[in-house]
Image (cartoon, rainbow, N blue to C red; front, top):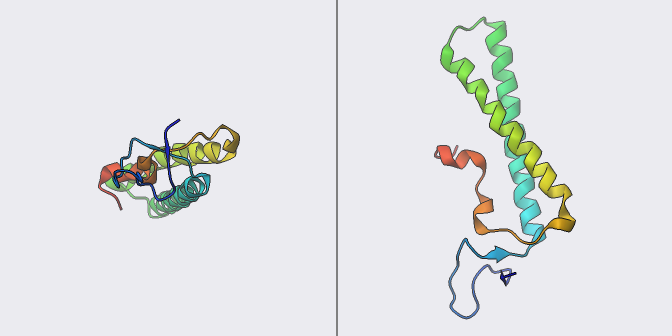
Amino acid sequence: MNTIPPTHKCPNCDSFSHDWLIDDWETFAAIKHRHIRYNQLIIGLVLVNVLAALIFQSSNGFQWMLNLLFIPAAISWFYCRKELKAKAEYKGHRGNVVFPWFSGFGGF
C-alpha cells in the first residue's frame, strides 16, 4: 500500500496528489463525523420543510421537490456510520474523501 506522511505531501518531490492513500484514521474519522453532522442538518431541515408544507397545505412543487434531498442525505448518513464502525478494515483513504456528497451541486 502506498502511503504518505500525515502532511499529505511527498517528502521527496513536495507535491500532493488525491490518488495517494492517506493512512490517517483520526483525520478520516473527523471528516466522516463532519459529514454525518451535515447529513443530520439536511435531514432535519427536510423534516421541518415537510411539516411546514403539511401545516400550510403548500402546493408549491419546488418546496416538495426539496424533500428529495432526504434520500441522498440518509444514504450518506448510513454509509458514513458504516465506515466509522469498520476501523479494523481501514486501509487508508484518498484526498477526495474530504468533499461531501452535495459538493457536486456547487456546495451549500
